[in-house]
Amino acid sequence: MLLLQRHSPFEFWQSVTGSLDADELPCDAARRELFEETGLKEEGELVDTGVSRQFTIDPRWRDRYPPGVTENTEYEWRYRLPGAVEIQISRDEHSKYCWLPIAAAIDALWSRTNKQALLDLQTQAQAQ
Image (cartoon, rainbow, N blue to C red; front, side):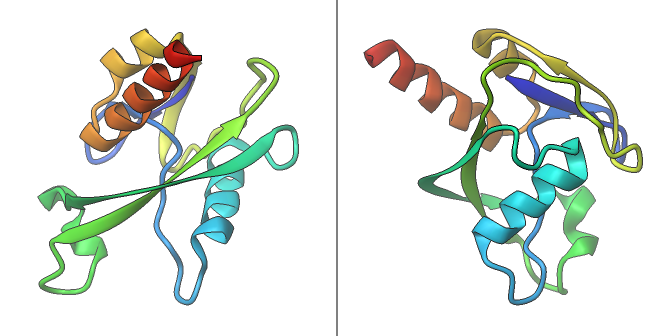
């Protein structure tokens, strides 16, 4: 699993994340954010899991949203690669990256919804 270490407003590990631009579809945002944060474009397969989650926006990020907005919807996408590759991280958001086995990635993640996405993936893999 690829994790990115965010450096602001504090250091923590996360997956590729981002927000929809005005009138942008989730599939377009997923492609754009993947490229902006990793430099990856067509090396793998981008898959819509069909899963979305509602969550309360952490107060440290509420200034990025219109006044009074406290909830957000997250759309889950997966990018499948044949193996670990070199990543070109976005230095304005992240300080480093790492590839981890799924259990270690779950432990390292800060976001509850990131953890849930990997727990679901782990459960699916174990069922196969």
